[in-house]
Image (tube, rainbow, N blue to C red; front, side, top):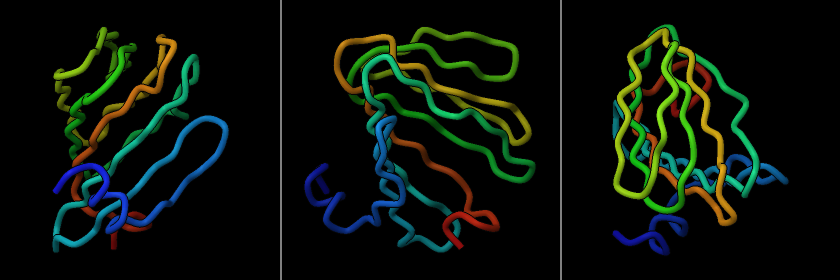
Length: 111
C-alpha cells in the first residue's frame, strides 16, 4: 500500500494548522498512524500508560523528545517509545515532517 492508498483507507482524525493525522485501524491489536507535521510546529506531546509506540520518519527532519532524551530525526530514522515515556516531535525544517506511528490500540484510540 502506498501513501495515496493509505490515505484513502485511513480515517483523518486531526486536521488543523499544526498537523494532519490519519489512523488505519484495520488490525485487531495495532493502529498504524500517519502524521504530517507542518514546518516549525510541534506535536502536543503525551505518554501512554499501556501502549508502546514505534515512530518511523519517512520525510523531513526534526527533533524528537522521548523520555529525557532529545533525538535529531530525519527520513529513515526509527524511534522506539516504551509505554509510560513522554514523547513529542518538533519539525525544525521548512517542509512537512512525515512519520508513521505504530502502536497498540488503547482506550480512546483505535478501539
